[in-house]
Image (cartoon, rainbow, N blue to C red; front, side):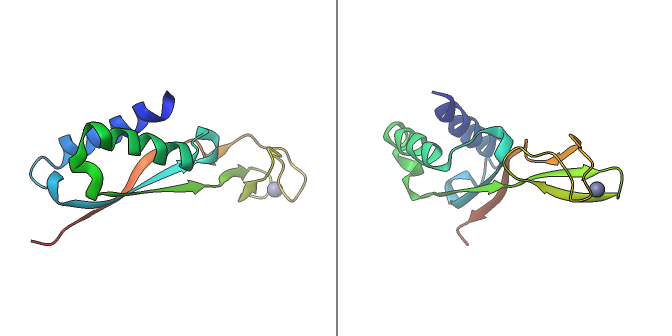
Length: 114
Ligand SMILES: [Zn+2]
């Protein structure tokens, strides 16, 4: 399953990034662009499965934010949102110059105060 490896990678990354504070993490936010084909519900299911293996993670809240697809129009030098895979700016110029929508990243981590 695709999502379980994503969730696993997220927590491995956090463990490497915060070796001293990992156990105090209360909340993790992930930003996923719509082009990354991430489904928040599947991520949550995968996270539940991971908690079965590592019960210590049960105290962590995992939030997935979906980011819209944004492309840049050369003709009017503006960014526009791509809706329903329509890569055409309001001015009529087609653009596949994607500046947001493919990312998958940890955007926020909250820790329990000491
Ligand atoms: Zn335009």
